[in-house]
Length: 314
Ligand code: ATP
Image 1 (tube, rainbow, N blue to C red):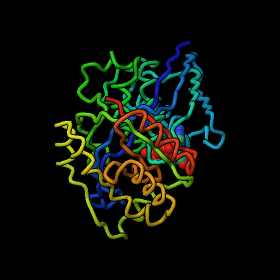
Image 2 (image 1 turned 90 degrees about the vertical axis):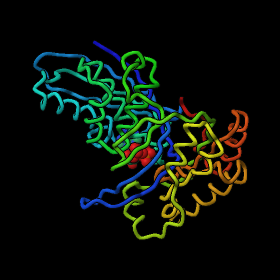
Image 3 (image 1 turned 60 degrees about the vertical axis):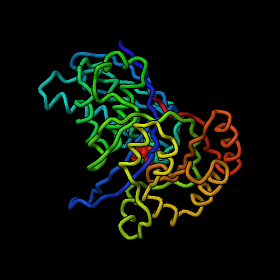
Image 4 (image 1 turned 45 degrees about the vertical axis):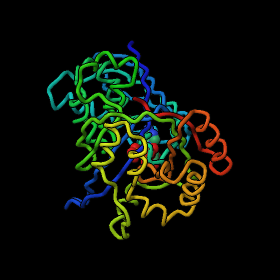
């Protein structure tokens, strides 16, 4: 029996631009993604047994989450087996137990599910002794979802029990520029900051937001070059000035509660420090200290139970 425990970190988008629409309906994006410390815990146990077809048992602390192939963590295990088949490697035989302890809000724009998928790929890379590097894992991760490769890169850099394995891997990082459909990634210098997250009590479908974004007027776009300059020069003011997410044009129009959350956070933290993450509905604020993050979080909890203080990883 072999065991591994991994942390599946969340992310925020410091900027997000939609650059076009592909013929297959996928949008082309340009976004800066930053890992945060808020995480789910993934525990995996592998009991190999010759002649026994792969059996996956998944459990979570959230009753409403699926525990079959609709769960990205389960799907990740199937993709990893598929990879073995395609590469004519020995097929894994035995029982795989996965337990997910969720803390990251679900369907929130924080890549919670994508992170869980990424963690299972990392875990099986170790348990099944596949010896893939970050690029190899990202190639498999892309099939699961467009945020999965970034989560793989971040987990390689931040997980205590993966750090040594990926110490010299050029793709292990905490912050990256994502282009194409979000899976072409270039590491960037990370932002060091305390963060408050506040999720209004609505579920937002990522697919629905991307479908809707083509029919709304986009008033402001991020200047990604300036955002990257801000990160490179550790110029916090420049980073904040360029925090723009074009998906707000759709999500804020559809969900007044997200507008309310953003306005309240801006009153507490300043206009430039606040942005919606991904397709929403979570809104985040960058704060100058942990005490400020805690105090803002307390006030946000009056409206949104799912409010957290955390920090970026770097
Ligand atoms: P992303 O889509 O980038 O992963 P998100 O924060 O917008 O990020 P998720 O938390 O991943 O959204 O959830 C999106 C949907 O995926 C939910 O409706 C949920 O039912 C489904 N899902 C499947 N597996 C998981 C999982 N392990 N954790 C959370 N949600 C999952």
